[in-house]
Image 1 (cartoon, rainbow, N blue to C red):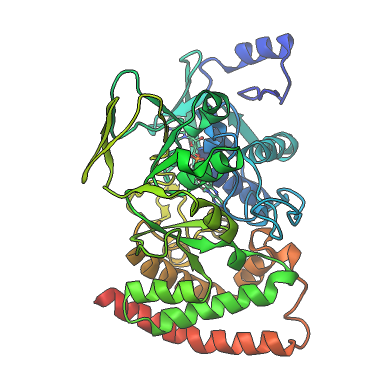
Image 2: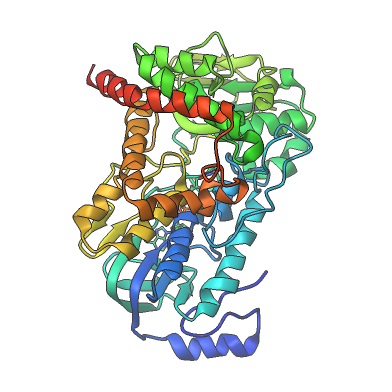
Length: 490
Ligand SMILES: Cc1cc2nc3c(=O)[nH]c(=O)nc-3n(C[C@H](O)[C@H](O)[C@H](O)COP(=O)(O)OP(=O)(O)OC[C@H]3O[C@@H](n4cnc5c(N)ncnc54)[C@H](O)[C@@H]3O)c2cc1C
């Protein structure tokens, strides 16, 4: 595995001479930079990439992990992106090859990168673009103390950082993954609870499995167990809340999906325009194929923008032993104690903890403040495009008030009600950006909107189907805005 040398040295592989050069160079020195980016996850990396494109600024990136990619360093081995790779990563470089999958539950759709692919992508971006630019210095295995100092996690040495322009907080989302989070329930001795990371090695020693949690990780684990040969009746699933899920079919980029994508968007806006209440809205979204739920007899209360294929939903429906008694409080050798009751269990059971929240729910704050940028989502469910947009606005404008108008943060959703402000916010941002011709062009040509998979439809006359869909959309959007405002006021 390659290693990045910290400090003002060069990128190198394991090499004794380079190590001594680093040690000689770094002790106690002050680091000067225009931008200090705290966090080398997807958001920090994408922000830096856009800043490199749009400015000649110098950048320091600091991160506790040993490689760029943030939470992907701690990911379980069978995790993949929820959304096509086309929408993920940095603007300057494609992730994957825009392949249409030929097998599996994602068959017929654009590829979803694995954790290993995401890590290798960000590693290459750092080594092949950032560091050779001479404008980026990267400090892995180091921590920023939010008071002007970086500290090496290995030596404990600290270095002052003098920031000329902005400190960029690229850790505000507080991503929480199973391997590193703290469980919110107690576990008796001799009860085996593992993170999904351990499954490929530990599962063969077990015949019975309990999945704890009902988010996307739990769904990944359910699908993985079934695909790996576990019998559906050997799986028990503890579901504190059911979730509405975005149907992956409706999120595909590219020409071959254009009509389906646009028609789904029109249907979504029509549902938003006509819904009488939140529950009615989601039922309409389900009827038009936008939303899926695993058990059609249960009305979900959770919505976290998780995306799934109809095939995965079908597979998960094979798991019939579903426990809906709230959250787990304690697991004992003979019983699982939940908020709403308890269920018997056996000593042989393997519990798979899927209760990490993935994305935190910190309150939104202005993206642009004096001397500080806090990266948040400013494009609904498009994390990387959000980070690139913030960097582009930072590079192009001076006035923080204007920049904040162009990049209002959208709170990450947790419940069905949260769909309303998120969608309304997204519609308002789109309108704002469309009014500035340069911004409109920038976003429509950006890789992270799937632009390299689209032919230039807007240049020529529209085919009749596209024209009809566009007309539906332009009629529905103002009505959707008005109705969402009304529903939020109820
Ligand atoms: C399983 C999963 C699948 C996902 N799939 C998609 C998808 O398909 N499409 C999509 O758009 N998004 C997806 N996401 C969301 C996306 O990957 C990121 O989670 C989100 O963009 C937040 O990224 P981040 O860079 O803020 O967080 P992180 O990846 O957590 O990175 C933050 C980094 O900051 C570092 N850090 C924090 N504080 C400090 C400090 N004081 N000093 C030094 N370093 C510090 C941490 O070490 C960490 O490496 C997915 C998330 C998960 C969990």
